[in-house]
Length: 503
Image (cartoon, rainbow, N blue to C red; front, side, top):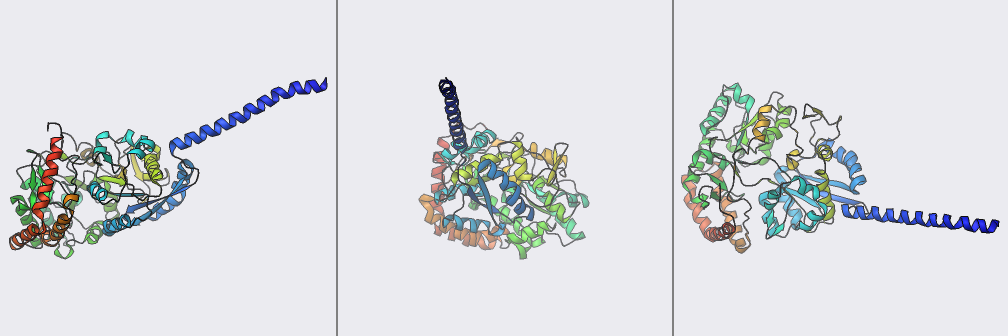
């Protein structure tokens, strides 16, 4: 009887035990499936990433402790950053990519994506984005991804999603110094020259403008009757936004007028000849609070304020467009491009990490601002930084869905940014990429001649009248006309596939 009772009791116990084992197994399988869907690996991954600039002490501490603790817990990976100083960034980044060093994620400007794709430095991201990037696609507008799509494939993540019309065609000035000499704003080239002359008369230790490798299109807004947008990072070609036609900028009258302004700036000391082309000196003088104006970037007055006020607590910055009543154009909704190298050991981890950043406001604030109460606090909807140390660059990931203005930035500057794209038009070159492969030999020779003979004209250290004819002859000999013809052919094909322009 007791035996029978025991057997009767044992059956349901055994059934329950089996059910418990099955439930545990199902739970484990479900957990594994969930992790697999999120891309979380069983073995920890070290994600190696290249960053520009100099690593702050707090960034090193933050990555090694709070950030990696969270990333290990939530993504089963840790981040390892390699910083390259700005003056050396392009050369050392490209060396790392060319030699196949084991980096998983790199950043650079959008204009470099097509070149890196052509050289085989980076890999397509479509499958990775679809599988591991739902929060990237949820928070970055679909049109922005078109910017980095070449030959039907996606080659970079356009990480910034913010206002962008007229980017790099404005001028950022030291507003406090402008006001100190009785001026209110900047609207013309003459205003910039007056600003420099008045400040220099009071304190000659200030530099006017050092960023001579770019900024020609700042002057276009006043000097050109037609709205033009640069087509390439090397500033040789442009598009006429009214007609849609390509412009051979170097052979235009406009180039001569720009060169004359630059030469005048060198002659009057607004451009210091001894520092021309010295990127490190440019950065040093800005960090020291000694730079009066530079190329703007829609949000640069906000981005650079912390640096300016570190040198001078009373510093104020603001951006202006010359001929402000003329239209602005959106050529690139994001100039920031995160790329995964072709030989990256952990491409899935790289995509999961990027997705994690935009997964929530809390993630976004954490990686950009740090630990609330320690590195920052929220005041009336703005962020008050409690340390001067830079963490993740906010401008790389600025997103309209999560953006908070710094507490020390004046409301007028915030309004400038938020309304920058009001009434802006889409550029004719939006989404166009020049494939240099058919003329790669000629293009390389053209660039070599351009850097040797045209850059000194661009900078104002050699007069247009003295060097231009010889420089253009050398450019033609290098194969410029063949490059120009190939560019026109590709652009015509691009335009034929576009809907009718409604700008």
